[in-house]
Image 1 (cartoon, rainbow, N blue to C red):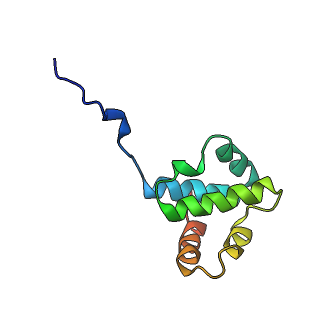
Image 2: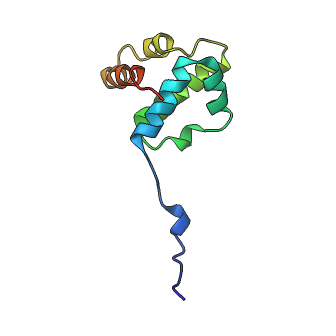
Length: 94
């Protein structure tokens, strides 16, 4: 029988499109935000920029603020890369 390596469960699986679909859904509907915030953590996002966007959505939600696209985008006014990603997320559908 083949030996199973010790680190078999330490592999990192990341899918840029899945992360973007989740973030897009969270900004479209507060119920979606609630659903994902109950199930995911910031560390579940492999890509740093997605991690940072998720953190802002999470913080905004906890404060009772709007988690829609415009509100979240306004938090990144001086960060061009974040603005570009958010523009792309606006067009993602699920």
